[in-house]
Length: 137
View (cartoon, rainbow, N blue to C red):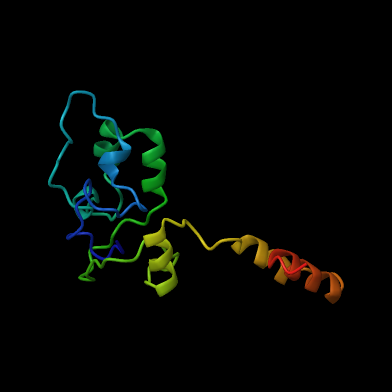
């Protein structure tokens, strides 16, 4: 989810903190989820800061650090919007939908192609590496 005002995003039950739901990341030993109907905006105070006094009581440190890395939603009237979690920019692409459907996490050999592209050596060595990766030798 792309956070706008945060009013329409369920704090515990929607993937606003990356691909995971907050309640799945936490262990509530014999207790229910605190404030189960809270939105992301409900966890922000009047000054636009996270309500750490509430969050620290119910979330482990690693989750608190992830939340600290997210800018709290401003009290603006910007709508929250869904986004595609399989691309960095949140926009859906045919290839990312295909990879998601096939269970592929990222583009195969993406880092290898980037390394070959940025290679600063002789062009014939770059060409050799390209042929090697395409199994053309």
